Each structure stands twice: as C-alpha cells, then as structure tokens.
Image (cartoon, rainbow, N blue to C red; front, side, top):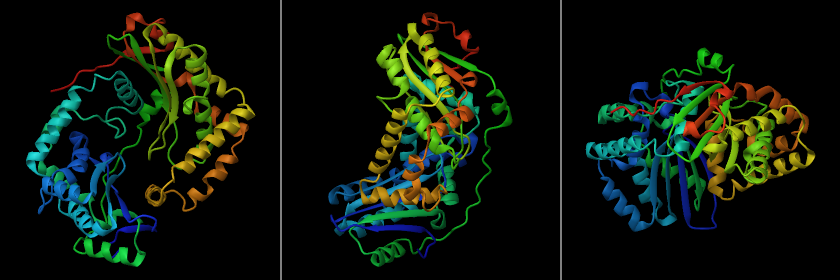
Length: 431
C-alpha cells in the first residue's frame, strides 16, 4: 500500500462477502509498568470510544443497519482490528474502519465507563479459583514486572487518562507498523485502490519501541529448585498447576515438544494424564498440559481441578507421568495418534479463505519462515519416538516444577511441604 502497510489478499468469489483483519505491532508488552492495563483500554476504546467525527452509537447504528461489524482489540504482542460486511457495503464499512484506526476520539465518558468495568473485574478476580492459579503461576515463573505476568491493579487503572490513550495510539498506530489481510469477493487491483484511498491521508512508519526486559537471571536461577505456592480459599474443589520455563518462539525442537505435549496431556481424551488421572483414578473431571512459545521464554505446564482431599495424590500422579515421559520412548501407537491428531487439527484451522490469509499475515508478523505452513505437516510427520524422548529429557524437569495449589490447605491429603518450600500467595486487592 502507498501508506506503507503490508497487505495480504485472497480473493474468493463464492459468496458476496469481504473480511478484513489487521495487526498493529504493539501490545501490552510495551505499556509502561506503572500503567498496566493501558494497552487493553486503548484496544477496546479505539472502537468503543468513537472517532473524531462519529460517536460509538452512530457507528453501532450504521453497522447494525447494514449487517456489518468493525472490532478492535489488544493482546500482549499485537493489536487487532477487523471488519466483516457484504461486498455492496464494503466502502461504507471500510470508511468506518479506517476512521477508527486513524482518528479515535477516546471519549472521556466511555473511558470512565470502561475503567469502571475493569476495576469491577479486578475486584472479582479472586472469584474463580483456576484464574487465581494461573495468575500465581505466572508470577512465580516470571516475577511481577515481566509483561507475561503483570496484572492490572485498581490504582493503576484509575490513573490512566485520555491523554495516555492518545499518546499510546500516536506512538504505535502508524500505517508502516501495520499488516492487513483481506479475503472475499473482490479483485485484487480494485481492493488495493480502495485501501489506498481509505488510508490516503495517514502517514508514519518507523516506531521506536521501548526495551522489553526478558526473564531476569534471578528468576531463571530460582527455576533450579521446586517452588510451591499455596493460595488459601475455602473450597471443596482445589486447582492445581505444575510447570516451569520452556522455550522461545522458533525453537527447532518445538515440533517434537508439540507431539510430546499431545501425548502427555494436550489431547483431551487420549493423553496419558487424562487416562491416568481422570479415567483410571477418577481424580479430576478434566486435566491437561500445554506449552507456550512467546517472544521470551514460554512455559511447559500441566493443570487440573480435583477434590482437596486428593490434591496431593493428583500432584504426585502428574509428576510421575512427566517423569515417565522423560525416561522411556512413547509407543508407536501413541506417536501415530498424536501426529495424526496434530495434523488434522492444523488442517481444520484453515477451513475458510480468511483463516488462510490471516494466518499468512500472522506468521509473517511473528517472523516465521515463508514456507512454514507448507512444511509444517512434514516436520510433524518426521518426529520420531526418539525425538520426543530427547525433547522431554532436554526441556521437561519434574523436579524443578513450580507447583501452585488453590484451595483449603487443611483438607489436602498431603502436606504441600512434601513438594518443596511453601509460600502463601497474597490475594490482596489494592484499592
């Protein structure tokens, strides 16, 4: 595009529809630590706070009348914006979309309403036990200042002003800092002309990004020994997470780790954790594992909810299954099922043209090789039982897990001290 944005196009004339997604290189990882929550407010109020020429209500009324949508949002590593409409209404919808990106009003009235919603959510954040477990787990893994663990607090949210939102927008929302993916009933040359026209007055490309601290050496050193966090809640059902630091994005071992995770606990019904903990022992209704691959070190983790009286037994079983997968090769049947399941789910992620083109955009945004989609299934198929064992030995360390338990400690069947030195979580909410 003339304005500097990168565009991905995939014409599809089957239906008279057009879908557009955009990614802006920003995210909560770049917000000031003392303004945690700023990026999320900016993402929601970009659309929800109206523009300099249209109120939110006016946009809602027009979009509802033509059956179209324009949405915005924010994640840790990116900001999102999207539109969906009939082909005949594309010009009107694109006009609103471009106005939202370029000229947000960040209405003070809407900001105060949104801040009140966030504050109420903060006040209720200890209502859901597993949310407590996730939050305490991230704090134990990354420390309180890391972007992957920072949590908005009420005083910080109250301090955020319209000027903060406007400054955040001015710094990051530039056409040269944006990618757009479009699918639907259009001709490519015509679509480029429409986009160029809609964003013709928008300028700006380079962004000076603030330095983002990675996992600090102290936190990595602490990962060398078992940590136990207990969050006291008077509940019959307890929440449990066990995990530790893992890999960064683009690690070549990620394919073997994906298969290892699928066999260990990634598959809802056939994994080892599910078969042992839910089916054979009846300790939990659900149990699973996952691994993350952010820009910094991710985590390898397993989690479940179980009765307080069986929390210790469940933790022992999770750790035993983790240890077993690091000591012996998985079976050929497990390996085949995990690879087939992973490939099938991968294929179904691209069931629509827009899923394909938006995934292409996302992969380039996050720096994946140009042939990643085309080579993914082949790399999964080439994973061997030996590869899975090698990856498990290298990256999975049950003796160095962070264990987070949320529940009534006096009812636990095993003293948490069995798993390591226990630290009581502070669930206080600052006003």
